[in-house]
Length: 151
Image (cartoon, rainbow, N blue to C red; front, top):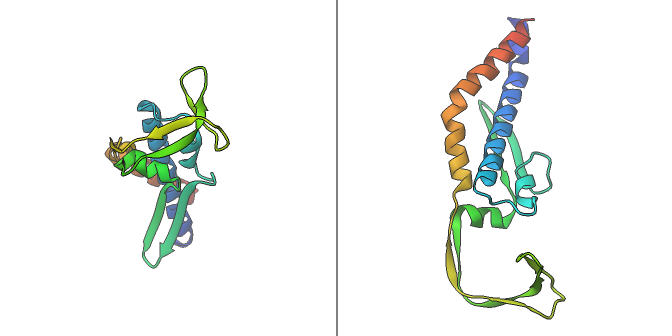
């Protein structure tokens, strides 16, 4: 019983981390499902350890919190939608396959016109899917930790 009491905080932290990893995997899967990945920067920002990843664990009194996400500004725009209020010029060029390449030194480019973009809700969808299977995953993780502690 002493061992169980002593190791419980670390076990709970491991479980929280595994749940966080699983949620991020759901986000990455949803990005792929909606075909929202181009350069991989957004995808990588949902991987623990990436410079643009949010991974903040807090153990305060009787509460364990893990905040996960992306620090990329456009991650929020893509999820929630956004509105362009006024026109502006974006320097760059179009490559041979129809992709625009941003180049601040280019003479050409295009004008962005005012319009609104509907959010794709990829994070919300991933969270909903994650929550649907979270109970079974949590039970599995708890069982594994308990078995590890009683050995």
